[in-house]
Image (cartoon, rainbow, N blue to C red; front, side, top):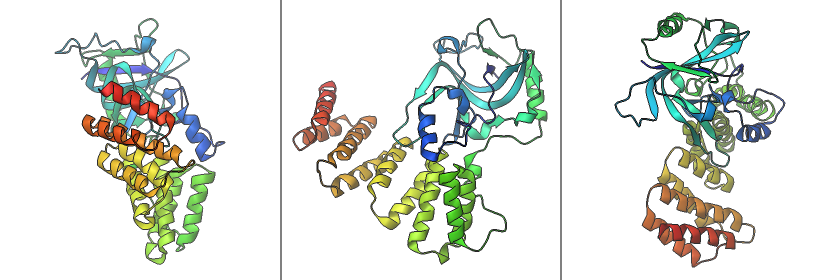
Length: 357
């Protein structure tokens, strides 16, 4: 097995901005514009961890690894070990198993309200990622980093490999990172038989303290008494659970609860608009398109509504282009240009149509 060691800066959790002084929305936007992707290296992001190390020229030198194709740009099934330097010693922070390592820095842009921009050199399923607690980061490695580099890559024949493997296989303590799949349905122990009180506590943890996991604990406990709740109360619980999961970047699960909300209330522009981007992220283009049409068929075009209606039209065309449905996209663009739309949208669609033809 190939392995690679990345040297990064110290962080306690590597799960985003570590502060309690920001409200839920300020924290979200601060993280979206953060230029330090290292701080997310052990964040469960919809089932994966995206690891970043600041590399010279953004390139991982894969020359030590043999490929059947000399043009290969990544290495699969790799053990990634993360270390930080303190007092000239390299301490293991954690590791990814079965990871993919990319030769070039990868970039994926986020959607409005959904997630953050991703910058990463390596990627692994979150269930295969292990972050040591701060007090357990005591194991050091003598790593022969080359000059001006902060990574070391080799194979299982390297003298370092058995030392690393022995440490990992013998480690028997708990870890600091969380897999969201394991906590989606967590509950309180010996909780009060009062779903309204539990709901109110959940909103405090969600909006005031940004503690989404504790909020989930109260929400799930309240849902145990859902037969005692009105439809509105149950809808509110599903809504804040969907929000918690979205802010935890668990988009696959978040959309399930937004769908429950819409099944009750039928229509809400802001929720539906948000759901479109969630559907696109999880590649459910069919539902994304039907949600676009639901909004376009419901809303009348006015001076105020034209802003978000133009956005929805643009999303619809983008989805079709993602699916490589070029002729259908062109047909919709031509139809839009023959109807009422803003000048900026008209120029945008004319440019797309020109590029497609």
